[in-house]
Figure (cartoon, one colour):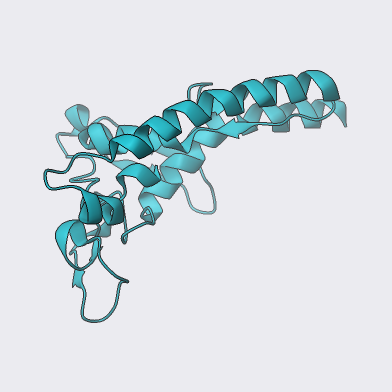
Length: 170
């Protein structure tokens, strides 16, 4: 979701709103990509599958509903997340998805993360580590959606389904 990362906000936003031109570009690109992959999957048959992970949609959720990502327990050596809603645990999800944990300037979106940067106390409550990159917690949520999510996040099927199909064939 490059159109709304802290770097983009720092350069083009006075009020925290995302860049409308880049938003429109993403809105045009993603449906075309899904159509193209549907056509490719029709051509190659059932042995191979092209997938599209819509990280834009997950990032959109981070940006506009950061509190919905309540506490998450990450199992060691796994991409599995056990998440509880913020309401259940009365613990906030991401505190912000517009301000980077580490950086300078507006939204901590200017420059690289250096020893001279502003650094947050708890990176787990930020969706972005620096001007462009999601935090480890945000990346784990993106991966969990790719592994187990609905077709809103990955299509035509999630990676767990593909792995199960592959195991059934072997």
